[in-house]
Amino acid sequence: MDEILNQVKKAKNIVIVPSFRLDADCMGSALGLKGILESQGKKPTVVFSGGNAGRFNFLKGADEIIFQDLFEFDFTPFDLAIFLDGPTIGQFYDFEKHRGQELSLPIKTISIDHHEADKDFADITFCDPKASSTCELIYKIFVNGEKISKEIATCLFVGISSDTGHFKHNNTTPECLKIAANLLEAKVDISYIYAQLYNTQNYMAVQFSGHLISKIKLDKDYKYAFYTFSPENGFSNEEMAEGSQIARDKVMLSLGGIDFCFVLKEEGSGFIKGSLRSRVQEILNLDLLAKILSPEKGGGHKEAAGFTLTGMTLEEAEKYVQEMIAKYYDRIKI
Image (cartoon, rainbow, N blue to C red; front, side, top):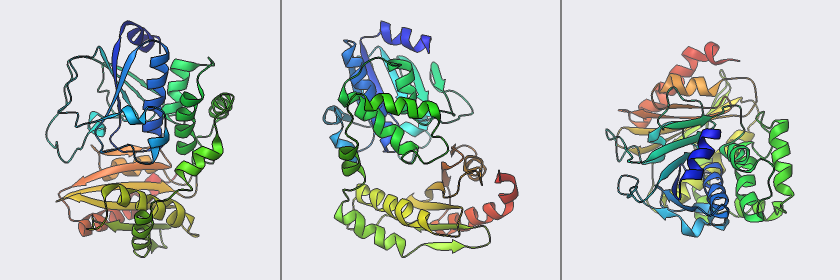
């Protein structure tokens, strides 16, 4: 932690890189850190490989994000790069587009994350798998009880709230709740946050979610539900991502009689992205399951994990995942 603070203290121009998968923790930690560094007189820049900030446009600094492929971004004007919320370098760009390529930076790099990884990719790594979120780690490293603005606190609260399932998952620790309480002292408007993130749905995303809900299948033997899908004409990538989140989190994970679920999305020829989510805590280790399914591109947390499969059709991937669940079920039980 001290090494990170020393590197930040020496740097003036700092580039912040959130992970490629757009979610509340990657955006909240990036924009929260941006605000913190600006308050210290630094010149931080957030560069994101995705196309836009999605539902997180209301967060302070979202309108200043540079949306650009990391392989095309010029890192040379910066003194330091801080990567947030990703255990491997491949988590920060479009892996399918740059398959076989490796990102190399000409400057000092720092990684701050709460996902366990087999090896470090940055010069300095701060990883705590027991932390609720990367936003929690940003608070511990850079705030630690000091007064911050309402805008910074909002960014960090968004990430902590989301990654704890709104404080209902087992990663909701006493320390996490204390940090959330400290953020509320900065007058975070919870009602506004929830209205922006969870009570405002895109019409086309809702339409797409209905399509996915109709595809849900159940396995009563191993107590899970799942659906698979490919990109469809008439829907943007953002609408499909939001629609899948609605179908998974608000419908599939509410089904009685299941312990977990998975989703498979075809993102290109022979390229499948998968996600795993627990409905019941402390039943299965989904992090281990993701690593079994994809040793090099799988992992996360016990209750939520992701993986990548290559060289398969969507139908083959569906069969493969079901077979591996059956084969390794006793091993992934907690």
